[in-house]
Length: 88
Image (tube, rainbow, N blue to C red):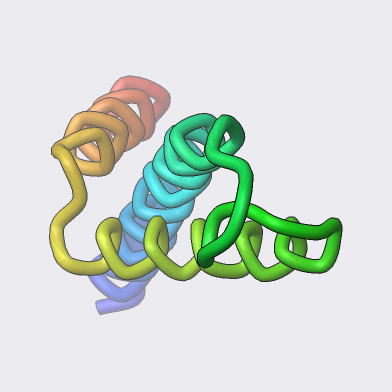
C-alpha cells in the first residue's frame, strides 16, 4: 500500500513538473512573439506596458499548458517516468 501511494505521489510530482516546464517554454515563446510590437494598444507603449505584457504572457502560457499545451508536457512526463523506472 505504501509503495502504491509513493508511486502515485511520484507520478503526480512528475506530471506537475512536466506541466510547469511546458508553461515556462510557452511563456518564453509568447514573450518573443510580443517583444517587437510598439505603439498604442496592449502590446506597445510605455515601460509600464512591459510589466503588463509579462503578466499577460505568463497567464497565456499557464492557461495553455493547463488546457493540454502543445504536447511537450506529455513527452517530459513519459521521459521522467521512464527514468524513475530505470533507476529502481
